[in-house]
Length: 165
Image: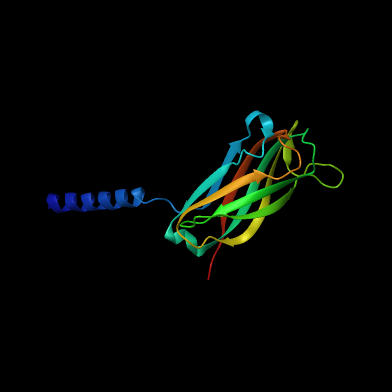
């Protein structure tokens, strides 16, 4: 009788270990990269890689850009070139995106303390990420000034929005 009980516990333990070893599905991805010396040069292109499992491709996603800058940042917006490379593709698709950072009166739109402000700006709602594998996102500042002063960090946030039907 104890042999069967021990075998039952062993089978349960093996199932729990197998479940624990399975990679977690994506709920939210968020990474930020510091800008060296708070000056964002055009040739500094932060890259973010996200791996999706086959189960993750059944969802819509909201995609955001995180921006952190000082109060001395000289503009009310930020133009970015956002390049997206899908799994298995050899080239990326690039689009130009404007990120509003301040209102028409110059008041910063993000949250801030003292002289540092943070923004989470949506760039795509209900995006479809159709293939499992590694997605590669690259950001390039596309302003007239190079390097762009008073930029502290840039980041990417991707979160599940809804299950596709």
